Length: 69
Image (tube, rainbow, N blue to C red; front, side):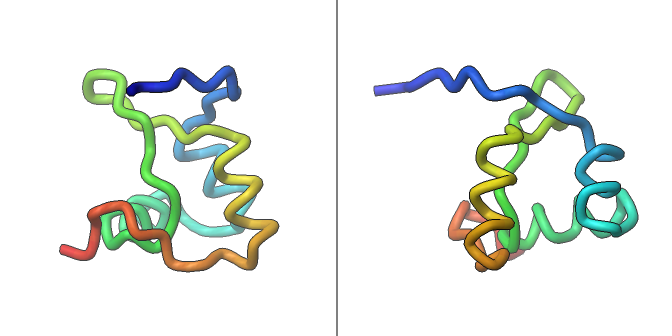
């Protein structure tokens, strides 16, 4: 069953600012499964604020999201 989150979505620039990293680093971490996977809206990538906050508060563990290319 699919569930819909009411969490605010933020773009890669906002995630990069929060993590004090470059946008390229954010995409690399996401692609390798080391952070929450973004929501894809066509060609756009957006991250859920609640998932990102939970991940940060948990100490930024590696996320098993099918990444790891």
